[in-house]
Length: 395
Image 1: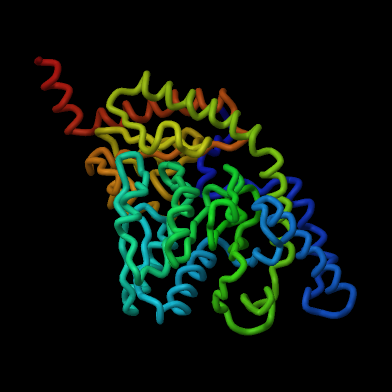
Image 2 (image 1 turned 180 degrees about the horizontal axis):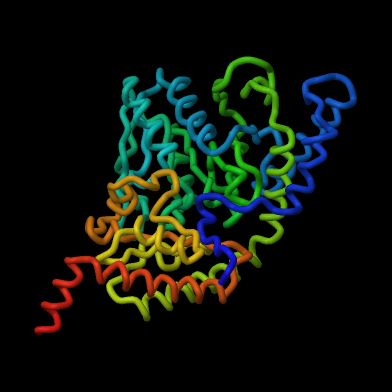
């Protein structure tokens, strides 16, 4: 194929043409500050209200539960730091999992340096946090539990509704990083007893640099950014109007196409996994086989280096990841793959392919064929593989 095959949609997605069309007027002609009293600003304020309603409708919540941010990282930071600072008088213990995104893990490290205690929950070999593990970690001084809805590397979907039900009998707030899951699976924070939820526009074909934090009624989360009275006094700064409009439209499209996309992506995902497992020796599927995001394929290849394979596949016109894009280039294996107890040599050979509704079967076939080729090339230069094959031929 002469064109690029993009299979790294967990890192970011292509902005939708419909989304871009909605944004353009607010980038050029409708440039007023939403806080202004004149019509040029008031019209933009009304557009922000509409975007808030679009997102709220998808989550089956009130528009006033949605607070616009610069993305998932800010939303995660706000949820954790805001809760820790405002509830420190009730306790200084927080719970999260070992496979969270670094936006959560590094924020937890920040809080640890300021006197808070963090419990990092183990996961099983498929990446699930067990309900009993969470239950046993809860303490009277636990003020927050933060567990991601779906993992950004291996695609495992956590039983978030069960965790929310469990925490109904405990005063700790429940936050979930839904950055990878929003727009991919239905999420009902009210029904699932979620107190706070983070999401980021660029993961569902919206623009980069914008996201939101859902905060349920009754939670008085303090301001994270101080200045003006935007976002009902909770998040200062002139709103990124065009991007918020784009995010609202992207969310609306994602909700309307969700089931159709899931069916298509699941079929392609399973086809790709089947071909890899049948045609490429010494491979291992990472994450749950069934309870995983429809577009996620994460496979480890023994006797190979994931980062090397990413470069070789790029030369074939294929974009994928050796793990999370936020940790790309690091020599150490992914913290997620270590947490699911992969052997270091196996973990280093991991590749993540993430599909979209635009992905075709022809692209999957081309990718698997190219993967077979570059992996064979790479393994021929791997001394451990050569030695392994010599020993096994003698047997």
